[in-house]
Length: 148
Image (cartoon, rainbow, N blue to C red; front, side, top):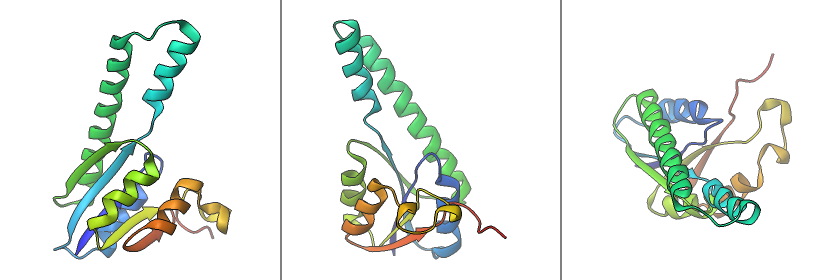
């Protein structure tokens, strides 16, 4: 079984815990993190609001974002408890996740909202897109424990 575990900064611990609980030990696991387009937005804002873009600033933002992605993936792999391939991407999140899921048998991901927000609004637009377009089976988990 090839499993893709999509981690997001806010919900990665619950997602990795679910993957560890539900996936067989022999599963071929890939941990995926997609960096947002924040760097692009920051560069655009800098050039639009503050004059010409300075490449050292853009490079610094990219380096910080890449380091954050590597750290998050390393923490997720440690929490998973066994080896996994690490995949850090950047771009439109929903498209990158669907593309990465092309070779997976199962995609593990978390809802955007917890149990207090049950219903359709527990899925934000990005998660909804991924669930609707995933080319494989999907394990959709709650990012929190049920109340009560």
